[in-house]
Each structure stands twice: as C-alpha cells, then as structure tokens.
Amino acid sequence: MDILVTYDVNTLTSEGRSRLRKIAIVCKNYGQRVQMSVFECTVTQSQLEAMEARLVEIMHPLEDSLRIYVLRTGREKVLKAHGLDRYRDFGEPLVL
Image (cartoon, rainbow, N blue to C red; front, top):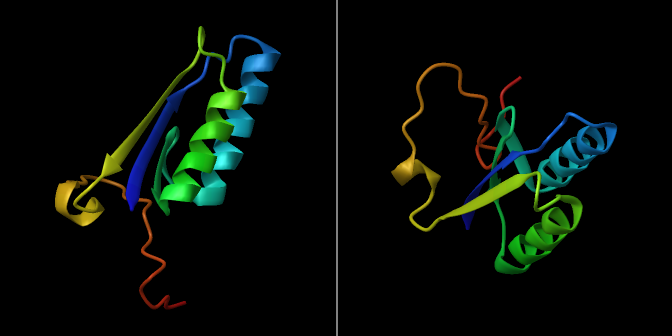
C-alpha cells in the first residue's frame, strides 16, 4: 500500500532536533523523501504498523505532529505534483 507520512517536530531544543533526525531516519527506512518533512512509502500492513509504532515512540505528543495518509487508490491516482518532484519509482528500470 502507498502511504504519505508528514511530520512537524519542535526543533527549539536539542532534544527536538534529535527527534527530528530520528524520525527522518525511520521514514527513510520505509520510503523516500519528497519534501523536507514528507515521505512517500510503499509498505505492507505489518510494515506500516511497525513504522507507526516506532514514530509514535520517538515523537513528543505535546510538541510534535505526525500524520500518516493511506493512499487507498495508489499515489498515481491521487497525486498532482508541480515543480521539483523528488520521487523516483524504484519499481521501474533505473537508467544511469
């Protein structure tokens, strides 16, 4: 399933900056960054549950925000991208 993960972390403290790095690392393990705090991921249900549990464990609920959107029809049917698009379809052949 395709998901969109967005987050906003309070970085006024060193603890917040540390949380921001940790959240980005977890998200990178499951997908690719398409904007600074936005990741597109293709995951199984169990991967989604593991990822969400890890992110909720890292974030501070009174200071940070985490949103996970499940794109039930797939990203290609719901996405309109304008400008610089950082997404790469790794399911397609990669030409160097």
